[in-house]
Length: 378
Ligand code: PMP
Ligand code: GLN
Image (cartoon, rainbow, N blue to C red; front, side, top):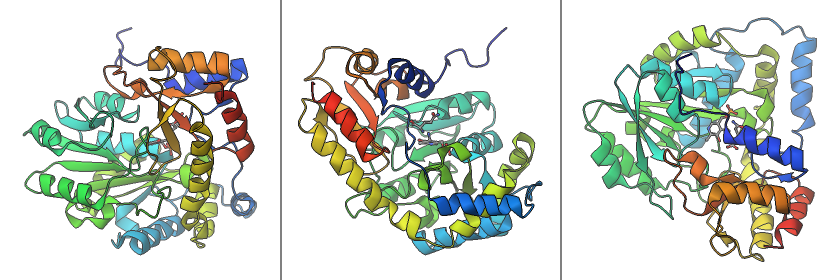
């Protein structure tokens, strides 16, 4: 069979989670919480099921949930989206991203991604018949290099995918960086796909610079988020896309044929739960405490800590601990030390080895302490 995705195997997250399970390692590889969500959220979903809300919802999503999302975006970022024509509920951010790409990328179009990037972007672009153009973030700091981004833009450039807070580097774009992007794109027709799944995990008093705050970007953007991250329910696979009406219309043409619509009772449960903003407003402090606990323990090892400004990831430089490549180190640390990690090289096109690996700290304190006890040998 001639394969459409010759470079693609099983994702690194699946591979490392399987190895962690086989070896009994503490799994700080794949990003997901090992604690449960708020029981009130479960009750809200169960209540919707008991009330018989179990058939297809409207194609674009349950209206109450779309209204709750629009209200949240307006309160937090100051842009009003029309819930009827500009918000669509998706099967997680994963489906939102591929659907946005399929909706706008034509054969031969170029799409800029910033390396390292989340692993689904490039295969999604390939499936659309587009060409991914990988522009590196600055090695070491993982900040955007606007000179390089500008040099990559040409008449074939259809879109750029940005992701802040960033997986895997845990950097958060500043207001100045967002303004630079806005300025750079102003004279172009380049669309923006903004992956903001970690929008509610930004630390040290910094604010999330949603594309929604920048009119020149928002007018050309699909903004993607995920309830899985925000409410500790990664397995529910529900997210959303906010985009101006003409972009949303194109998005929905594809959405209706790749999922048609998304799980009804979960949408009703989420809509009811979102009436209280505290769960997402309290998330930065919740994860900052875990980050600080984890960093304090890692600081006692020879692993070199990189900044973690947002997301639930912490990257470390392994140079002082090991001569192994990132990929080999991750396998070794899982097998021999009993803690699973993800090599950053998995997020690069060419497997670029910077001696940096990623841990996920969305874990119970006892899990983090167990991992730190094992890592203390390094
Ligand atoms: N984008 C990024 C940057 C992610 O880290 C994730 C979660 N792995 C996703 C998208 C996908 O989110 P979801 O689980 O809602 O599909
Ligand atoms: N987003 C998660 C991560 O980066 C995992 C997603 C997945 O397993 N595909 O670890």
